[in-house]
Length: 461
Image (cartoon, rainbow, N blue to C red):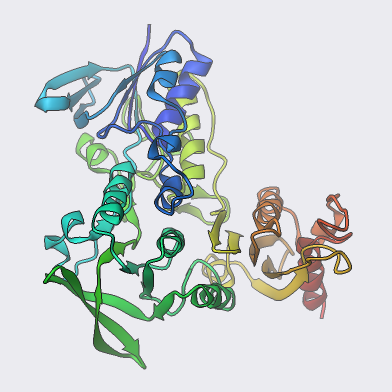
């Protein structure tokens, strides 16, 4: 009987374990994870903290008993310390410091990522006890909730206006905190073009959020029970400091791959520290696979990159699990499809923006415009703002961005664009797609097709 050990109990690790058991009911599967929260949705934490999800336990994709019923042994609060590659053994440290060795025939490393903690004076000395938080796992979420319910802070500063930062801005505003968000770059949601980022910023301000772009955290100190914050603002190329106070500071400035276990075992790392894997999720070490936020991402338009997303981790884990029991599956690749709800607005993107496409050697042209989400004569029509990028040389669709109402199915329309890019469609072929239509929900030409026709019209001039 073969033995599979998966290190990591989040998206990639659990996906690998489940896929292996699905294909080979006889394989012994053990999942090792450092905390006590197997298969929980970290993506759901902002909605638990906002109060929309009542109990953190509801964030479990599956209960531990469900995993065990699938024939998976789950070892929580167990840290993987070293991989003895030649001996096919994993050294672990369990609860109360108990050391153990797990023998394996195949190993999947799904150690995820760690939150980036910027090198800010004072930040290293402060933590949840003083109201300074990161948000990366269930433990972080529970500590933030304990802080919100215990100290009852009234003023929050969110550092970072990316996807997680903006979800937390909304969560804290829903709890009636006064919220300021800092973003070092010139716009909120830098994953979008500035014109669309401006629409998101407008919504934030309308909801009472103070938005400060071109600003980075310069220093942090705790004095008299409140947090003193120094902010460095870029004004005309000159960095000028100003000061603020807060009761709670949340740092959401991205993640970096947690690849030390793989590195110490001899795996090859990319420049950013992510584990290099092939399309089969093999590391090059004998019988060792890796998947999720700790590895490089194959992007269908860019090749090797790093793009830590839950959807990607699930797919990579499934591929690793299949190949770990003798399969020959390839990861098809990512397009970086993302969506975020910011109050009543939804912003989404897939594929490449114009500058990304140019840097990758394409000849991009981008069309910008808007179209109603359904027929204007039916009440409640709302505009969806789009930016569509195609290649001028071969007409291929390269990327799409959208911002619209949460009631406008932006998330499914971006999925249509992602499907078209995955299939290699040209922009002019979008009009050939047989998409659904009824006046309360759409138009004979969907907004994506309107954008495609707009792009083709400009390209033909």
